[in-house]
Length: 417
Image (spheres, rainbow, N blue to C red):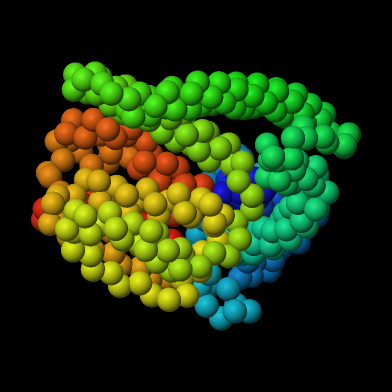
């Protein structure tokens, strides 16, 4: 979820909570204020009628539908203002309505009068409707404000952040250039950019050191390995005893294994560091056919039955050298870990590559075979890096890789999408 969306949701949530609380407070406060003001108005009306009676106006002639004047015993104490809701007939509306009734007594010229005055009450439904309508208008205005506010934020305030994110996405070890960011005047973003610049310089420095060490190690091992290989080949051509021949062959095989390990680790390091060029459209179908043609003799020697269904024109965005490594490792693995007179089934279309081969039941989980130096004990000559390289290539190019054992078949599926 985007940062701007999170801010929007939080802002809307807080606004809704504030509006709800405000609605409750306003409802209670407005209702109480209306009752208070209405009570004060009724009290003033009652006093005005009491003053008219005191000036000689006949009490029975003043009474009408909203005014009630009743004479009560003189010995009763004077009653203070008393407010209550009641149901009374309202002549203009020609029906009974909830009204507020205020009563108060006065002793005038030896008589005790209770004067009651009615007035229509503003009902709770009317108050609620008014408040809800007002709050909805406020909320709509708030939404418009939030929309404009977030638009301004996304366009201006978060622009330095988006620029930094774009620079990070374009950062590459191959360019060998540390990140640089212009000052934007926002303290937090400037601190973040300073850290990213410092981090990129450290990463490039460490990368160069590791790369140099790997290249030197590979070179220094391959040179003496080639010398050892040449001398062992010379010894093989000399007159030697059978025990000596066995020892020489063992040494030659070990030397070859060291050479393959160094080469495989160098390829893995380049893949992990993404040192290969930007992917180009590559005809995967033709590449697979070429690999099968080059290994045709090996397949024939092991009497393996090959069945293939290769769709023409399968184009993938992948470096040609990397594609050759991927295919060679997969086909080579299917041949090496097969059995005499076994079978290999290959299916390729625009969506996936599937390779099935007969072989022994694995002694551990097939998912572990994708890890480095994982191999079956029955294959001591294997360096255990072939499938690890395949796995790393799939990660680099966004392919989905699965290795399973189904009904006596080792099955590798690579989904391209």
